Every structure is written in structure tokens, then in C-alpha cells.
Picture (cartoon, rainbow, N blue to C red):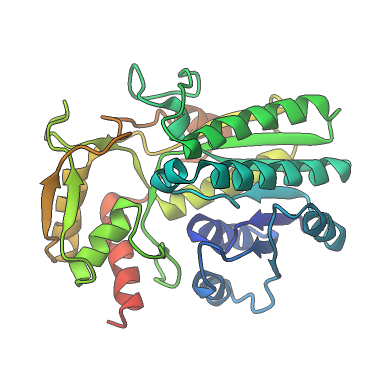
Length: 342
């Protein structure tokens, strides 16, 4: 019998790619989204990629407990992957209460209803944000968490703690995996789904692609005086398809009972640091286009360098990032060109 996975926020950037990989791995998927931060473009793209014209879509808000109860009553849910959260660091500083209300309440509702079903697996999308400015790199799962530098980051830390406590108190009704993402970039190789920010992008690669295609006049690179080889920040940029595949490995691990403890944590990254300037140069080289850019003052809250030690995910889950940065940046550009009708 096929297992069913609920993907909350499943019409967004990460959620849509995860949905594709789950379907291709043989899972039934229910997509749920309130479309507060996306439109139907990627949901429709998922249907084209997978051939699933009947892909279930529930338009709902996970802060509405009754709606969550109705959703779990309608489908037999074997696992939940929770993406339904606000994610802009700067906005969270300006609107902290909005972030705490949405990101915490939506997750609390999922856990409450999932536990009431008697047995459910919960995968939470966490973030390398929880490590703050690390004392040493690369970071492992044992690297101490540090106080968050934004309300957004704080909600990730708080949701991690909530999951630990809920699983411990559930009497076996809940199991959980925390995937700590680093910097997801790129698009599906089909160019049918990708990152689709509303307004001015918060993430680097959409700003690069929009600048390259002429939507933006110039890319600001915040800071070129960091203690790194070229003075720009270093990050662990991971292809979105590689990241999505990690969710399939994690869900399968939960459903097949292979977990070694009730809550497991995995870093999902490449283990290879790349600076902002290196990423821009690689984009220009692989796609044969120029990205007008200039250096701007450092941005508050940006850390100097962070990248993952993905050994645990490699050995325990059997997952590994395999796509090259060239493949990733080609896919990102193909997606931007498709959006522009080129």
C-alpha cells in the first residue's frame, strides 16, 4: 500500500521540488498551501513534471486548527513535511509578532493533530541559522546552537525544541527528523519549477538571475572586507534537487522504522564553501552572461562563513549532494529565461 505524505507549503520553492521527488519515489502526496508567498506556477509545474494531473491540493492556512483537523480527517497521513512558514530574515525583524504567530502556531497545530492520529512521522525544515556565527567550520550536528540573530531564526530554534518535547511526551505517537538546510539554490532541470520570489528577492541567486536578465539594474554584494579569501561571505550552496532528495531519504527512514532515536538531526549541505563572488563569477562563466554588480556596506546579521559537515547524512541516511554548481546555475538561468519567455 502506498504511503501518503502531506507537504505543507507544498506550492513554494522547496515544497514543490520535494513534492516532485516524493512522487517519483513512489509516494502519494497531498499539497497544502495558502498561497501567501507563492502562486500556482510551481504547483502546475509539478503536475507537468510528474504527469499527476490529479495531484491533491488543499488551499488552507495551517494556523487554522479546524482546517488542519479536517485535512487529517480527509486523508490518511503517514508523514508530514512542514514548510508552511514565513522566511524573510529582514521582514521578521520588522514584523516579529507576525513571524512568531505564523511559524509557531502552524507547527503547533500540525503536531497536535498529527499526534491525535495515533502514529505520525514529522519532518521539520530547520536551518543552519540555528548555528549562528559558528566558532569553527564546517559545522556538525553537534556544533552548539547559538542565539538567533532574527525572529525568523528564533522560530527555527523554538520549533526544534517544540518537536523534541512533543515527541518525548507523545508516547510513541510521534517521531521526528530535523533537516538543517544551508543555502538552497537553482531550479528543476526541466525549468518548469524554481524560485519565484514576490517583489524584490531576499535570496542571492534570484537577484543574480533577475539582474542578468535585466529586471534589476545592479546586484549589491554586501561587504568585501570579510576575513575570507576574496573578502566576501562564504556559504554552502546546495542544489534544490539535491536538497529535495534528502527529504525522500528522511521520510523513508522514518516510515521504514530505521531511526536510531525518536528525533534525529541531519545537516543538509554539500560540505564545500563557496563565496558570494565565486558564485557570481561561476554564474557568468557557465551561462555566458554578465551580472552588473557593486560592493555595498556589510549587512547587519550576515555571518562571515558557514558550511556543513554532511558526513552524518551521507552515512546514516545514505544521501549525498551530487549536482555540480555549474548544473545548478544553468538550471537557475533556464528557469529565469522561461519566466521571461525567452
